[in-house]
Image 1 (tube, rainbow, N blue to C red):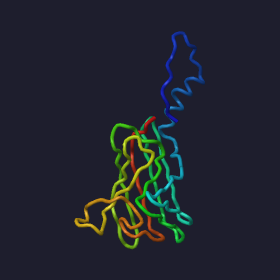
Image 2 (cartoon, helix red, strand yellow):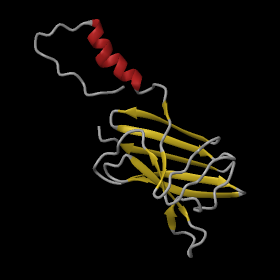
Image 3 (cartoon, rainbow, N blue to C red):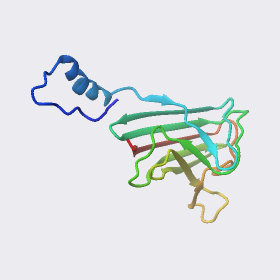
Image 4 (cartoon, rainbow, N blue to C red):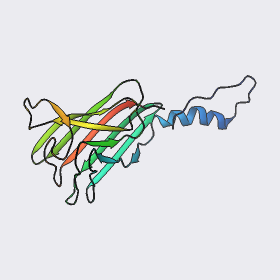
Length: 167
């Protein structure tokens, strides 16, 4: 809800409606409910399809600061596509620097900690996890149908980040 503040003009009559819009509504947006959205999940070669799994996103935007969470739970009919994965951001990232957050992958008794990264001016972000097929395992690779493990029904991924939006 937050937006650029009004430029007041000398001699302008200040009304209750203007004060409500410029002060009360702006202030309330700092404490407002998060907005839900369904992020697009893509593969660099073939797109995955969530089918009976769940793919949810939510965010809170205050000025140009975006707090965002993406949750994916794989279903029994989820197809995993091919290539590396990307998820749509709630708002296009700013152009200054890479934006980094945290990610988790859980499934089959394994838990992996990783990162989510949005490049400058990007509309999508990619998750990076340790690749158990590489040595050393501490090297991060882009999330894919087999990274950090072979995805299956009931496995989940959560990514959280705070970033600067382009506008």
